[in-house]
Length: 109
Image 1 (cartoon, rainbow, N blue to C red):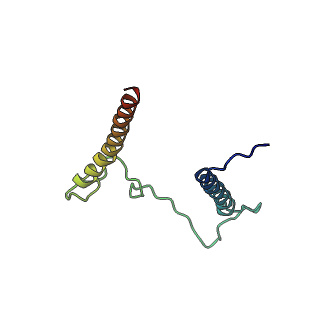
Image 2 (image 1 turned 120 degrees about the vertical axis):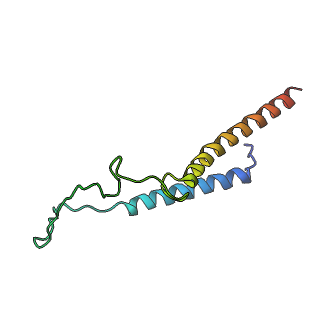
Image 3 (image 1 turned 180 degrees about the vertical axis):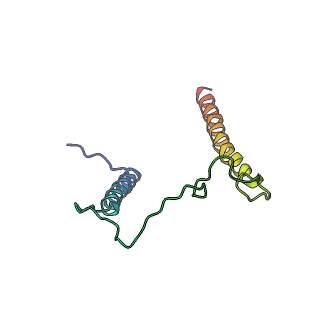
């Protein structure tokens, strides 16, 4: 019976994939909180008051103010960051497609 040569690069990638899968499973198992069957009630000395005045984490529409500084929410720097986050993937995809076309045309020639 003929033995095939093992590809060391394939072995390394398989080893990395196996170890990362095991770590992921272990992390998910230990990061999941254990729930008990007991229902936890808040102590009677604590009073929970729910106030909806629009000052929570998510503000009500129209309750904010216009940005006065480039670093404010909705300011110029935040909009510039949004533009960069949209622009970089577009450039990467265009570059990959251009390189694929070059490789395909050089292979056909």
